[in-house]
Image (cartoon, rainbow, N blue to C red; front, side, top):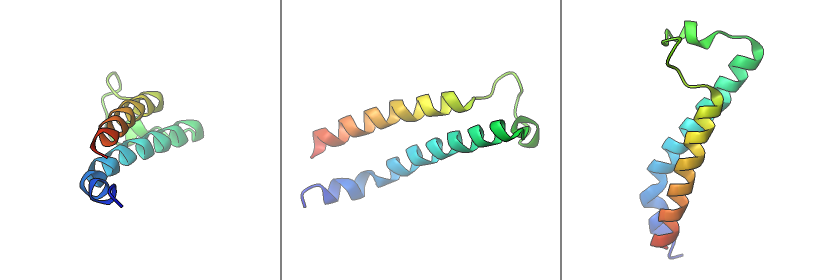
Length: 73
């Protein structure tokens, strides 16, 4: 039960990482079904992230999160 306070303290960061991951999943779904999400959300067509880049950001943050969390426990 020593990990419970650390889990409560860092769950906000985990929710941000989860949000980025789910945004990548949604972007993949929209792209595979043919929805032009760049036009719908009025994003700059030259400077927007693809679903692969969302997943890369998520993996980097999960790696940092678990590394820091393992140091605290």
